[in-house]
Amino acid sequence: MTRPFSFVSRALFALPLSAVLALASSSISFAAPSPSVPKPAGKSLPPIPTSKGVVDAIVLKQTSTFVGNVEMTVSDSGIRFSMSKMGLVWMTFPPKWDGIAFNPESKSYLVRPHSEWKKKLFNLPTGKKTEELARYTVKETGKKEMIEGYLCRKEALMSVPSKKRKPGEPSKPYVAGNIWVADSFPAPKEVGELMTNFVKVEVKKGIVLKAEMLKPNSFTEFKPVFETMKITKKKVPASVFDAPKNYKLVTSELQLMMGDSDSPDPSMGGSGMSGMGSESTEALLKKLKSQ
Image (tube, rainbow, N blue to C red; front, side):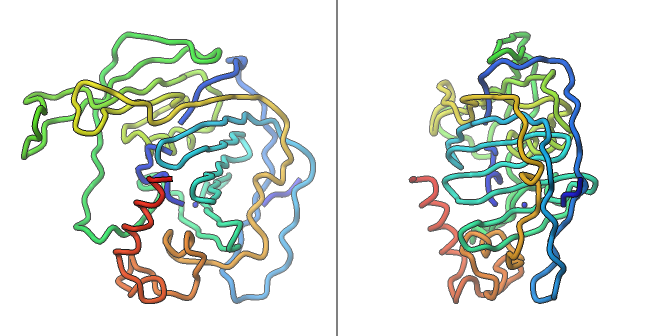
């Protein structure tokens, strides 16, 4: 059987997300098809074969305050998630685990090496001075919760006070959020790397099934930012993890979202989509958040 990165996450915290339907905690045997990766556009390529048969997988229907509804499919054959609000699909598969994001509407795709996406899932220009996204330290709360058959550890995300403290901000390290981690979730370690992008703390094993963060301008009230609505174990077509066929290659996430492979890459200092600069990116981000 042969078989052959998008946004979120940036903050992707999103992002990224998880909970429901009980599953056996025992390890699952997955059949792993071998991948075929798309080559840059402009060259004559042989047809990418379609994978045959089915593979065992776990499908999670999730929701994120940033990227909307998410469907994540996890298997030893790969990881795939679709983001309805952005209209994008991201996936990765062995043996290299490089990330492929594609836009089904514009039929364009973007490739990021594993070494890049595991550090930062998406690269989007903001028109502002580049800042390292806040990364938290984890504090075990000692509390556990069953989320649809999975025993989850509740971990507090600790943050330090800002250099210029905001009104009401504690003067000592404080809880900025909480995550619920299911250690027994049977998944490749790359799922943990994906989750690390979302929650900004290292997830060594398992998967984050729920997350909450402080409400804006509050240091006492939390709001859900990531939840799992349903989890099912099922057989899916092996072709779910196939790379897209007959798609054009783009070089930036903004180009991917705009469906434009000819415009300069803003992250490389170009003029942006059809002459639009970083302001268009800001407008796009605001539009996504408002949907």
